[in-house]
Image 1 (cartoon, rainbow, N blue to C red):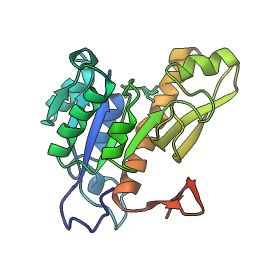
Image 2 (cartoon, rainbow, N blue to C red):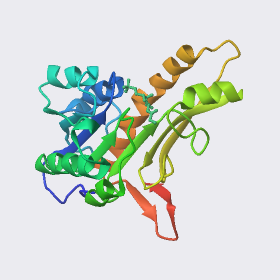
Image 3 (cartoon, helix red, strand yellow):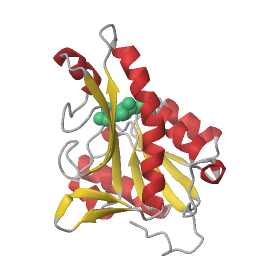
Length: 224
Ligand code: GAR
């Protein structure tokens, strides 16, 4: 992970991976991209310029690609079917991200599992957003699974990505109450509202060098 002072005044560069609508990409653009952080009342003295340098999708019709293009952000599409296997696919993505000099890879509604070969290229610098309070309800349909279970509280997790599915060290979490008359859609809407705050906050903390690992327990992330 690029330390804040390592590169002087160079912006902290993000590569954002999406598969669909990209509302979380939009929140990153609105809150952080190219000086938005400085204008944000919450930005501290340590604030460093943040730039979305590249948006990647596995899905050519993802609306998030348009959101990027509307903001002049380069995009690239890597459909899984174009590659012999997941490793070849991920290595091609890693090459493109490296070309853009990204400091942090953000999975923001990216629905494929990234391979260990990809993670090795960006050590401790790939984060994921997940719409549940992990370790509860990992996987591809967490909001539906939470409601089917009858849980009363769910939430949002931002975590580092490791070789497992939704198992990496947790950076930030926030709870969301489930109401008795919630539908999947009404709950998704409240979860999205939290996601749109929490993911930019985690990125900002990392860009400021305020996120580290407890040496005694590498699962525990320290926020200073
Ligand atoms: C978000 O709710 C994100 O947490 C979820 O996909 C949605 C993408 O929304 N990610 C996962 O479920 C990953 N397992 P968006 O495209 O509007 O940002």
